[in-house]
Image 1 (cartoon, rainbow, N blue to C red):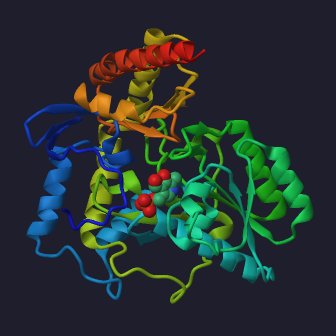
Image 2: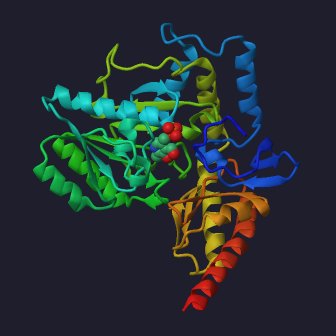
Image 3: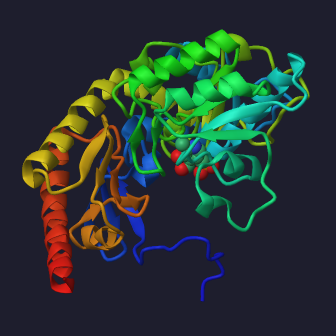
Length: 398
Ligand SMILES: Cc1ncc(COP(=O)(O)O)c(C=O)c1O
């Protein structure tokens, strides 16, 4: 029996080697990876430039110092993140939930500085922000919250893409200081915010002097064809939490701020022992530089289109919906379809199912068009057979 705590329903496969977008298991079987460790392995596996940077860092003898000292790699990583976000200050931590905790603390402190004693944050139904007490309280899923009450207070929940609901809250709740939105909901089923909606939200935030906080932990860092989803909408948020793909697999989180959130945190307000250490920061710099030099934003847009178009032409109207942006793709099947994960593994393809009935694809940004077509070739027959089986079962039950 394993001593690993039983918090995940794991598939009985272990990947032991990787190259590009390909993985090998212990038996030597080869798989095409359309998940990237859930949007983490931005540069795929064994990218030469990334590997060299990490090895050089290890060979220097220093992978950690402390935030008691200056960390030049941290300064370099923050400069790059400021450039690609258009924002001003970066707090480094180690995960998505930590980046979101920082965002929530910033919103509360912003509120207190404006004389709001009980600051509240507008959050969205079906959003996922993490599993710490504050972030699970902000998360719009009872499944994530159940058993962990009492929840952290100070969150007001509204449906995504419903501006009127936010206007109503704005009119009646004087405690609101921020809107926290996951502009493409990943765990919630690849639910895409309309760009008009995001612009409308931003307008309300500006009028009310609320913070606009965009959780881009999963959808950010180039996956949608631009660095960040808010850039598709054409404005600057005040707070942008990042993690997952930011260092291509080295654990890292970042809470990036600008606008009304700039200067809110001062010495002593927040901290993290490991946050921003030289190993993680080397990963950040190598990831961002490689995305730029290899044109991976344009690649994500192009290969994402190849996959979505391919699935549409192979499957027609059989799936309930095929949606997403760039290499963040959801195919809603309208029925529980978790079994497809195992069937895909058998067919040599790594995918995920989220929100019970949505096939989720989050491939490495280095995937080629040909590899994108291979994703479609391997996935479409499985989905076709799955939908045929379930419509036969429905007919037999009548
Ligand atoms: C949008 C979003 N925010 C936050 C998190 C939490 O990140 P972590 O698991 O690194 O704490 C996730 C993880 O799936 C996420 O998708």
